[in-house]
Image (cartoon, rainbow, N blue to C red):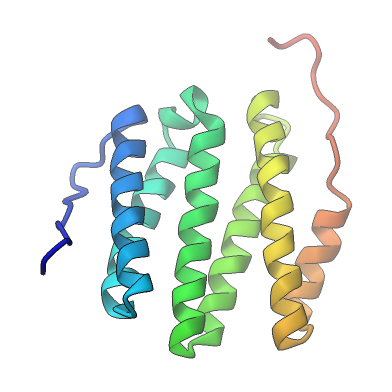
Length: 164
């Protein structure tokens, strides 16, 4: 496979190394997607998603919240695009909804650091637009309607000003 270098993700690196590996996997997936090699793109994007999920659930989120949350959203959206291109609309929608749900949980969790919550809210805008695009193309459904309604009410949550 010329131009495609498999990248092992075990054990998962943390922080900057993990984000660099996520970028490599995503670029490889993008190249495969552009070439119409959807199986290969899905493999790279799945690996990137696994890595992004690990980063967002670990200490890397505290160190680089914007990058970790962006990686999570982009990985889900890349897989959604790949699934949609393959005609697997159910899986595509699942990835869009999962990204949205993850950001909603972070944005609404009062125990999460305020700066991380703010980054989640910012990325939630992108996830919301993806769901709106989905509805425009595929029509409304109960699941997207509920998620869009829930995220419309998310603004800036009450922050604990005593924490720094």
